[in-house]
Length: 228
Image (spheres, one colour):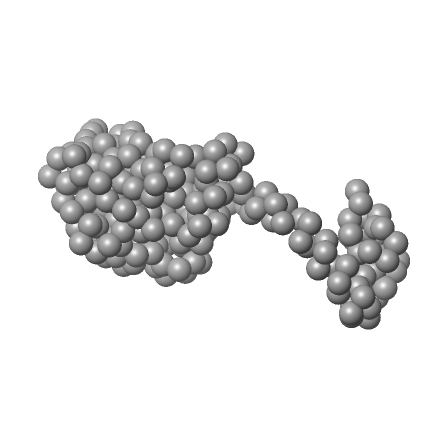
């Protein structure tokens, strides 16, 4: 997985407080069994009218924002349901970062786990960033994941990102990669638990000795450590 230190691109303003995941990805686009085509559904009812015609006043329909990679939103961006399709749709559309003063909790986790940078700024800075993107269409923003700074025009704004997600972006790690970094600690815990709680060791294998649903990897005898 690629490392990600800098995200740079045209920043499109989306000044909608409490923009929920149903608005980001309407329910009619959830009928497929895979992730394909979700870019077409992104913000559909905001981008298009009842006849399917583009709403000219909406930022993403304007030529200057055709290749935007960054959205600047308002407070509580991505509230509502736990619809991960909202994040997938943003990524498929080409969005790499969303800047906002606050995010819906589940959307925030979904975004970071899918490597969509959710950059949280202060309320005051959020208003300044929205104003800059709105009054100067085509303005470019640069997000530096290492310094946790947004550069827009001549100004710099700090943003918040949990340390473990910052590390994941900078080192090209997904959730599995992050877990493998502490593999030795996991193995040590497994060994200690096998000694202090032997009745829990390999309990699934003991309960279902003839199951072929999940083949058991080989283990060091009595150690509880995978030796594949």
